[in-house]
Structure formats: structure tokens, C-alpha cells
Image 1 (cartoon, rainbow, N blue to C red):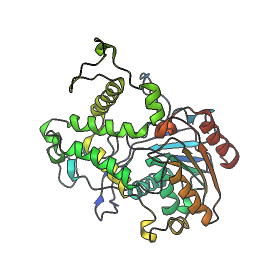
Image 2 (image 1 turned 120 degrees about the vertical axis):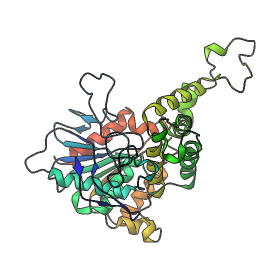
Image 3 (image 1 turned 30 degrees about the vertical axis):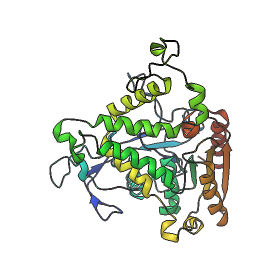
Image 4 (image 1 turned 90 degrees about the vertical axis):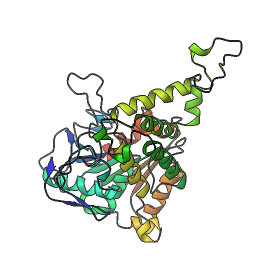
Length: 369
């Protein structure tokens, strides 16, 4: 869907004639009351569930959660997935043409925030004729968007489902994001963000950024269980098993991270990575309330489900409990589940039956369609 009128951004800039890519699942009821908005994390998109016809490996990123008979049941709910502004999966982003200059945005794409994304999503819902959502749901950065919805549009939603998220990033998380960004901007092929004009892609920087990110998504337990200190078969060729090389890939974990980095560099846009990680860094609803989260959350009116995972050190359970406390301070209706799962931050995408059943039970018993 294309929007001609300018969208004011928190930075003071605006963007006009922009497009949002979205997908819907299920059927909107006559009262238009059964819509559930799904907000995506860093490298996901509007393709939330299902498989594209003729593309067997095109499964939506939350397909285990959303669909007929699944925890968010599309036989009951009308589910909407939106690709955020600045992304590289269909919505207007740095690789598109700026209507004001006739040139590709590149590094000149305006800075966007979580709040800007929520405002853009609200415009899309206006165009779809949906005034109030049954729920807004997201994991990680998507959970931040769900939380922001409760503060920006408290009357337009009845439930918020915030999974593996936080009220802001701590210094360690910001540091990881900055190292990943520096890997990209110092890649010789980056060209100050205008690499499109040079017909190159800063793949080296993207590979490293993804490797750094991927380490933070996994728990120590999962890494040790999957890889430990295993060597690749190709290098086990001496009495010690080592080649003692500073260049070769010897350990399985090295091979795995390089594979993930190579794959990521083939499909993700470098400027998009910079934009989205900055949006993560900037999100802090308590900042305008003297750093008091409870004061910020006083605006929220809906009911909440929060889920965290014990081995998630990127968005630890402590951060979810901060949100829970802030909501309870305001006497809000909150359900909280802390899942003892070994998978680290990636757990919010995986098939832990306790996690999936918590979400199913919440929707079945608390979210009328």
C-alpha cells in the first residue's frame, strides 16, 4: 500500500510517497474486531506465516505460532504482518528512489524509530478500516513495537503480547550493535552508504555483523551442545587434530558462523541493518518520564502477556520483569511466563511446547475474536 501524504518522523524529518508491504491471514469479521497485528524483529518481514505457492522453502518466520489451529489461530483471528519502513523486504527503504531527488536514498534515508514504525502501522490500519486491534504481538524488537503501541495508541488495542523483549537496550546490547555497525561502515565496499551507485555490496561487513549478532542470539548451552569444541572433519588430519593456522576454519562453530554470515550477506541490505539497529538503540519510553518506567507505562490501558526465556542473555527475564513491575505499579492486568528453555534469545522463534501453549491459552481464554 502506497501513502502519498508525508509521515512526520521523530527526527524532525518526514517521508512521503512511501510504500508498506503487508500480508494478511484469516478473515476480518463483520465487526472488524478480530485483527491481530504482528510486529517483526530485525531481519524478518511481513511474511509471517504460510508458504508461497511454488516456493517450498518460503515458510513464514513465525509459522509455528500463526495459522489454522495454531496458538494464534487464523480460523479465529485476522492476522496482519507489516514490513517496516527502512526494511529491505518490500517497504520503502534505502535502496528505493527518493521522490524529492529522483535518486536512490542510500545513506540519506531518514532515521526511523520504533515510534515511527508504529505510526506507519496505524496509518495502514486506518486504510484497512480497522479502528481497534484485538492484540498487537511481537518478539524482540517486535515486542518493543507492541509495547510502544500501548503507549502511542492505548485506545486502539485490547491486548499486547510482548515476547523476549525489553523496555530499552542496556549498554552491552548497544555495544554489540555498534561493533556490528562498524564492521559494515568500514567495509571498503560501503562507500559511505552509497554502494548501490558503485554496483557493489559490503558483504564482508554484513557477514561480520551477522556473526556478531548470531552469537548473541544463542545461549552458551546451545552452542556447547551443538558444536562444543568439535573440529571440522577436513582438519582432523594429524595427531593433535589441529592445523595451527590463523586462517583456516577448523572448529565447527567457526564454520557455522561463517555460513550464517555468508547467507545473510546475500539477502540483507547494509543500510537497513544500520537503520534498524539504531531504532533498537533509541527505544526508551521511560526517557521522557525521568527514566521512570512505571510513569511511562501509566498510559497503557490494555491487558498484557509477557514471555521471557531463562537463557536469553540478550533480552534477559530481568528486563521483562521490569515491564511487569511497571505495569503492576499501575494496576494493569498482566500475565507473565518465564520459560526454562535452553535456546537463548532464539527461543521466541522455536517450538518449545510450554511457550506455544502459554500463547495459545492466553488467546483462547482472554482474547475474544
